[in-house]
Image 1 (cartoon, rainbow, N blue to C red):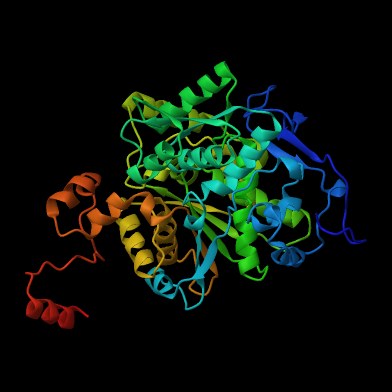
Image 2 (cartoon, rainbow, N blue to C red):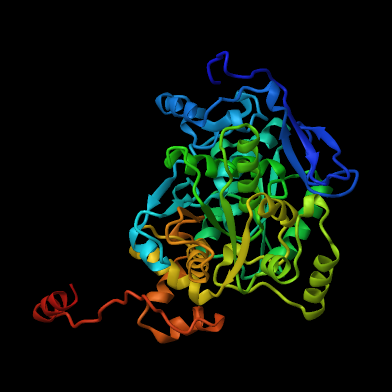
Length: 474
């Protein structure tokens, strides 16, 4: 804990779970398992009585914990900020050293997006132990599961959540992992992790949305702890991505946060993070938020930008949402994008994301698979490889810059959610010289060209020819 000073507020037992609906507002103990409100069925938040907590008066106070990296909690990039998510006693906290991530100033990507030099940053969450941002939230949800004495934990997944859950179960040996995936809807880089870490992996006929329905039912029936981002404790861990961004920027608030939109856990968590920091007086303004859908999984874009659905102070008009979901059911519409991590039609955190968009004066855009893969190639050429879904943030920033929504002088942070090796098939197909491979993997999704391909050069096994080619191409 932070050392007690007159400038700090302190005591314990300050966390509750609370319904997000202002017309309900029901509260529950933090040490209870729920993914929705018992009274009205809406989502729940983890909320805190900050006046009774130990919170620094300035964010810079957290820098002292870099000198305590021998402490397993202060070593973690999540629990280093535990005063800002104070729901767990120290002896129950689970960590594998997550959150050792990088905010990289990316000049070549800034030029591609159309930003001034020094104004675009990439927050690279692929450096987490399981290779994606999911570890930030998983360590928090897993900690709560440990507090509750859970013996099994379950999730539906497009891949990254399952890899993270399986890793925490394997490392801690506290629980068994049960994972639901849709048929053909998981990249091998991710599936290999779940299998290698010993998780029980259940593949059902259907997509992520189908798997999500089933895992909820199974968890309720068998009393298994559910760790998908409908779990409010997941979002508490994901808040810390923004704390690390601020830390890397020497506690200066950027103008924009741009994030891929799938199940909308990150955008929801980021909005909550900045709202709480503003409430605590730790920041003086909130950055704008841009959530980027893939065009093949664009529920948020359709509802927010085309049908005008808003948080509206908590009074969300559900009619257009129900109508759109009914249309998808009638048409048999399924999400379809090369960015498999955001290939989701029914985001469970929709309402929380709407709240974040209101708090952050946000916008929503959709980008094509072509735009995603081209942006991914530019990110990779700058030295930080990412999976396709991550590159949606860069493609979205480029679109918003082209529209004039983002100014070239704005300070912009794009979130890269996962490591390049999460989905190597897409990367190899983009850069391949084999047109049949390109067509099979990418052409079927409407990708027409590899604008920035770095193709292998085929040569005979002849020294002179090899030297000639190296001189020509380098």
